Image (cartoon, rainbow, N blue to C red; front, top):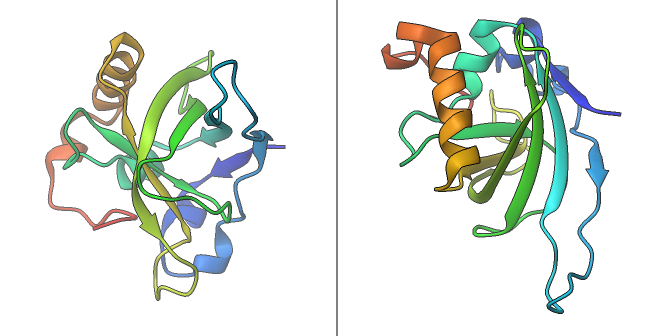
Length: 145
């Protein structure tokens, strides 16, 4: 099961409207003895929902992901994201850089993920910015700020 963000769910007017993000895979032990990044799956169907989820103010770009999964700043995550009309899912490695706890009025609970500074992170930023065009440069409310 994966999270699907639609225009109605991303409006922020009713934080109950956005269901929790289902974790496609839990964090587990890695070969080096540490924790592997959590794997999250997300579908965003409208450009307006993508624009409110995109974190343009984060160096290298980022994406807000609604979830009830506990997280700490700096946690590594790996998101598989399907956006708007793209046929394939984008793999986005990154780190938690924002946390919206439960109960914040007008905001869904979730995490902001800063894209990794590598080819996959740059590809995610570029693809999202092309899809949302000038919308991401406007002074619009987002799910974070």
